[in-house]
Length: 68
Image (cartoon, rainbow, N blue to C red; front, side):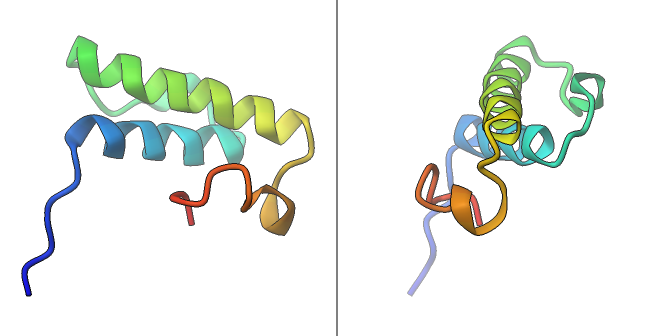
């Protein structure tokens, strides 16, 4: 059975979330496309907020289950 490709914007958000959660800089955004960058940055912001709240590792799984 074929796997359906995920949306590019969803992938950008998830990668941004992971970058923010790991403490990487927002300058590490790989995309120059304004729309993808916007999704990446919103994921990054949420990831940084979760990192500051202490929701890393096992405690953060319930927050965003699609990010593993």
